[in-house]
Length: 76
Image (cartoon, rainbow, N blue to C red; front, side):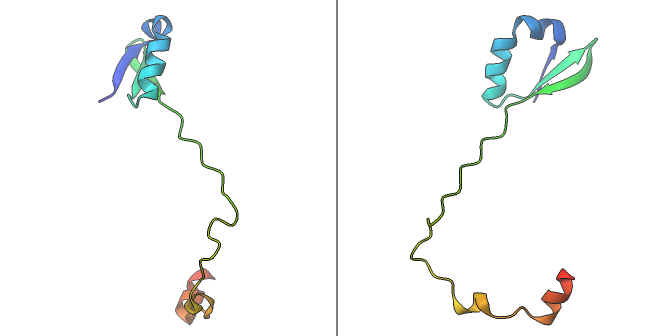
């Protein structure tokens, strides 16, 4: 359940609210009692792809077979 906080209170408690949002708490900022904005954590950063991490793993021969006509038609 989201925590609803008025903007004035949010100004004085911003550090605490940021910690709560970072921990996963959804915080709704309200202006004059009406929901105005949402404070939430950023999505986790994507990990960098590392070339060659599947070295030594091979694709089956089925991977290289042509697609069936109905599959090809779906792509057009």
